[in-house]
Image (cartoon, rainbow, N blue to C red):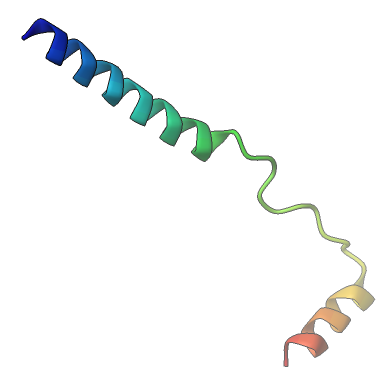
Length: 48
């Protein structure tokens, strides 16, 4: 019985570790954008 509980604990730990790793190991989500007014105007025109 203790072996099943140990295996379940290890599986739970691995699940939590994988979720944590994928949430927080990524780089910067939004790269810095160019703040010049012309680039903002071009982006607005392209989205319409």
